[in-house]
Length: 213
Image (cartoon, rainbow, N blue to C red; front, side, top):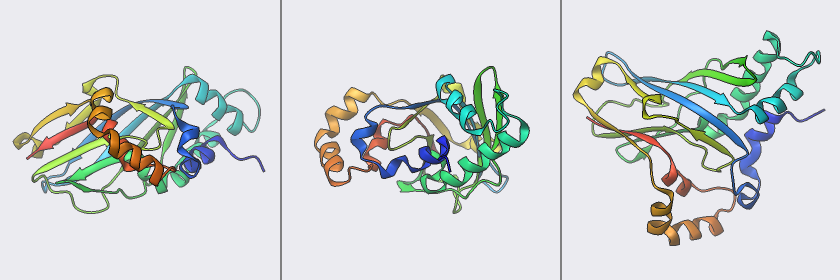
């Protein structure tokens, strides 16, 4: 049975990090952080737009009737495959609450569309534990293995939704790669050799929304 592209993507972290020295998949993302009426995070709404090259490979894998497009049932299969294969990678969510890493629940469904030669995904995830708007919180989407490049084209693609955020301050943080390497050179080197399959140190490079309440 042919291994699907997304299943391979979901398993990439098992391969040596050296094989993934640069991204193979490119995603333009949008993240909406939604606060509930109780003053806690309710959910994270994601939109991912994939590059044309990767999209073409997905069409090849999932186009069962070989009509060079993805029918609704084929798109649904793509969504199901991604939902199952990325669960171990927390759907690339990069979340902290007062310095503590926060994981997310499995989404109910990942909606997939195919427009103008590009694959789009829409899904929402909820934090695995309560995230009250107190102290410092950070929100982002990032692949720590560097296999997938997740980019927010503008700061407007990182949004806070809900009245509860009115009492908070926020800023989009885009780390300078050269500065991160300079300041953490030894730690990054040690992390690579101690855990060549991937390390959380790579999160130092992630674009994130920093919120203080």
